[in-house]
Image 1 (tube, rainbow, N blue to C red):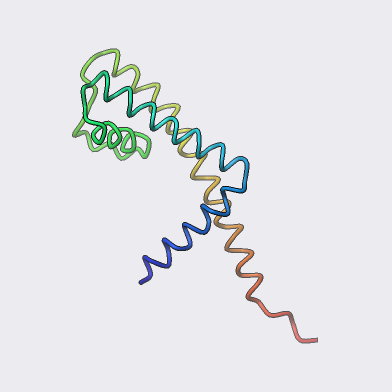
Image 2 (image 1 turned 90 degrees about the vertical axis):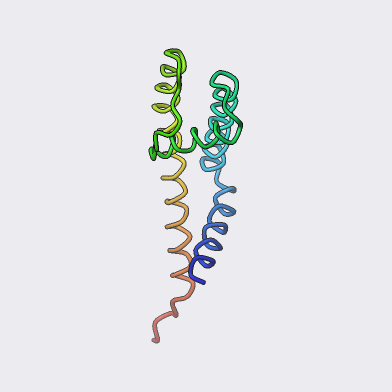
Length: 118
């Protein structure tokens, strides 16, 4: 039950974040970065789209299980650039998401507090 509440709150934060120009821009950049990487790895490493997407997400989230790895020197160099830039994009996106989440929580908390009796 609590997982559903967390997912509901997350969806609400993302929806409210979409009105924020910075959040929207970062979301588009991250989605484009993942899509580009997925296409590049599908073409040059001959991986399936799912494997390529998986590799991109594991790389950008810095999990890096190591079950997939580039096989050529050129793709290894591409992966270095992809990771260094992409991790920065991903961190910036998540930082903005957290800022929006905290602001949303603060607004919710302030709305539920009753004014002092006077």
